Image (cartoon, rainbow, N blue to C red; front, side, top):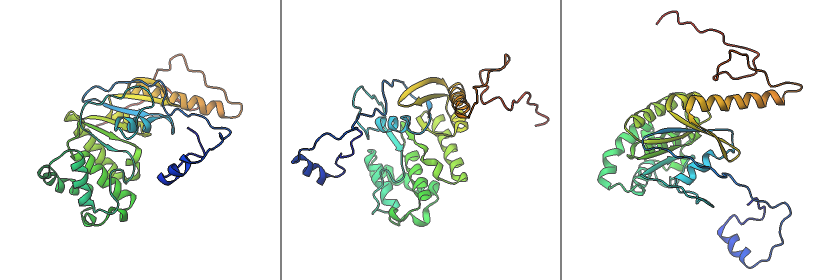
Length: 272
């Protein structure tokens, strides 16, 4: 509900229970997702793409059971780990090491299993100098490093990764993508939300294009990415003053997109 008077704390809930409030003009319902349906096969790597506010992150929150669906069903078969936002799942007063143990326990791992993985998690995260410092003192980059390392090393059946990796530096992003590739080859089911369509096409065999809470297209990641880019280019052309959506050339392939002001007509490899 788009409700300006909605209580924001437990105290406000208690107070509002004893107050009669008139309806606020302009209140309305907003559906983050509506009539969305898609299936992710076991072991598949699927990218969720689309503009901001289109429902991608909401989908991951539903799959991770952080949100409950207002209607419909979300069926998940397997152990889920998720990296959805900075600091999610971490207690700010606990150290990085303690948070590793806390997340492992929440995942159902025994103390012995967690102890076997702690050093690998710390090494991957590259925050060993700060691992015994409360995470409330971590920078956003350190949060991401430790968060992804924990999510990627706790033997997930299903890994959910939101755009949060964009906070990290280029070297760590590359390291994360390499790790995602390793998990993919080991049979882990991966859902990746990203605005980096190159990474989606490189890592994911399938993609789902979200737009204003509905699914526009599901299929091969390159086909879906090109369809999305075509729509973006057409929208940008339509917004330009007096601009017309460019007509496609007769020989233009399905992978062509853009305004047509520049065309790639040939690609030639000269050596290795």
